[in-house]
Length: 276
Image (cartoon, rainbow, N blue to C red):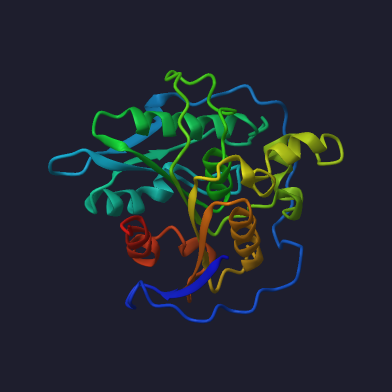
């Protein structure tokens, strides 16, 4: 069973729950169109990671942050505020970039980049042995693929030991690529009818059974006008049906591009991470 909770941010009690809004039945997404890209050829290096170690005596739980930007834009700076907030709360944070789908296809290279960041977080000497991956929007899609990874991604990382995250926090993410439309075509480099297997491999909704030990917090803004709430609830229900733990948190009054702001989601994330 999937718990759907509604939380107010930033002034309200982060543990408060209420009846979730009615889930729309639409299976379309209002995302804009874009153009396709060529084959992937580029990986980011480990120097593209912004690592923050909390003050005090470790070890610390690690959090990897993955920015949004429609797969073609954005940078780690978008997650810098949340990274500072989580570091101040006692989390070793790794804020990562990834290869953008500008002229090259992002799959699987962008997912590999995030997987390498997860390996770096796990290998950090101040890490306590746990890794949570947190992604916003397109970054939530990438984070979900890495969290459900069964040693598929990151084979070209400098660190050879694969790492599967313990927890996933998705912030306003699109978890079913079959519903996104032309916007995600640059990520795959081809439309779905030309390579359906590629699109299935890059669709988190199809990978939910790969990591039954995963614990997920799927967060969605009540006023998100870009991504439908059903992306979150359908993904959480699929995760739960595959045997893993998944909770949906609807943040009252929050819009899509506010769902990575620390004053909107920071306390809610920390409260969930600190639960037993």
